Image (cartoon, rainbow, N blue to C red; front, side):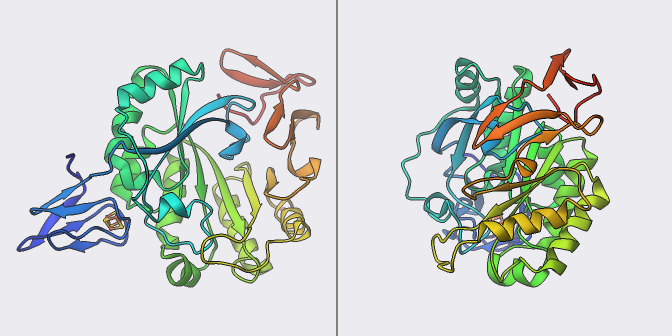
Length: 335
Ligand code: SF4
């Protein structure tokens, strides 16, 4: 069974995991909060490494990534476990349980599957890939060596040392900033805002194409003050970072009414006063102004979206660079 690279001995038979801010101290036989790292005979072992609970070839828009290879498909894989406890988790069947059918897939097999699918890109997604970081790093290294892009969809909750390692191999990331309150992160979600913000900063510094998603939950994180502060944080990094504002729907242990479409749109309108690319999601009809990508130079539509379908006829593509068909300027889209 593979062994963690992120732990130390903290006492007789006790190991201390150093991957995420929980810093679990585990006696013999205990599993961490993430459920996938276990003290077995004084070693921190990874019984679920490479055990893939689900895979699909998805539109990249579904991650969501709107400014990375729009209109392409991506092999997407998920795993058991998560180091957060969001009570409205849409994927709680896999994030909060390890009782899932999950065959082992080696990094080499995963890369072969991506190439076979005709889409040289892999998304590590669905629950929380970073709690499987050792396997992730192996896959990412293998993928890089074969010209396959690595996409990370994550809650951004690991400490800096691990974050730097994984981000050095990541081409594009969608990172959840679930709210902008330390109290809500720790009390409701079981996470840590500061760690997530550090992760986002490190991603941008590392040159990873970064997009942010926030699930808007009524009366939890949707005050104008909180969303303004989150928008200011993103703008402080770059006003060009895409921000996806997505509607909550009842799931798992959270049964409040779903976020109304009007609330998502009004939040997007306010965010668009400070950020260049704001998108809405999880509502029946996304307004075109919050689903299409427009050329900052001439205002032409670069990418027109309907659901997860993307019409990229407004983009020209040459030498791995996207430009606007109408004005010829560089598009805010990466390959
Ligand atoms: S990664 Fe898992 S075991 Fe390690 S500190 Fe975080 S929750 Fe605990």
